[in-house]
Amino acid sequence: MIKTKRHTKTQRTGRRKNWWQKLSVFKINVLLLVLWLVACGVYVATLNDITAKGYKTKKIEQQLMDLTSGNQNLNLSLSDKQSMEMVVEKAKSMGMVEAESVKYVNMPFAAVAKK
Image 1 (tube, helix red, strand yellow):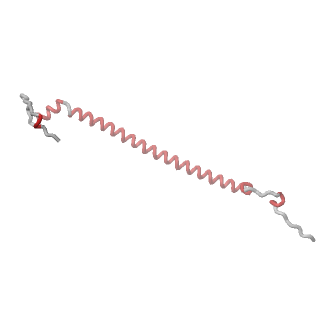
Image 2 (image 1 turned 90 degrees about the vertical axis):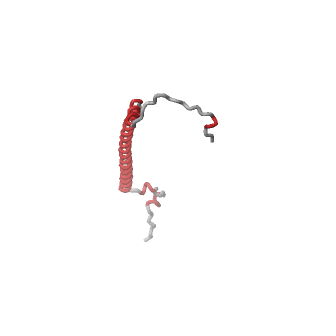
Image 3 (image 1 turned 60 degrees about the vertical axis):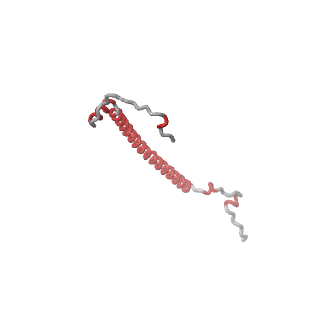
């Protein structure tokens, strides 16, 4: 009996399989599942980050509104305390009296301090 050489499939067809032809359906499905899980993880992480930044933004906006209203209250209080009636009332409570006559002193230019 004559022994014949057995040929493999690639030798019979004369072509080699590409890497994508060697993959089975199961391997492709597993790869697609892994890619899908990675995409879902990235989506959840991004959504979490956006939500956290939204809460921080809302908190900072609330602080800004509180500070703005506090600033307005302080400006009202300041303008009230700077009014002429308040200054006169405070001066009287400190025992000051209104000046009867005002005298100005004329100083020669030589008496002014120079640098």
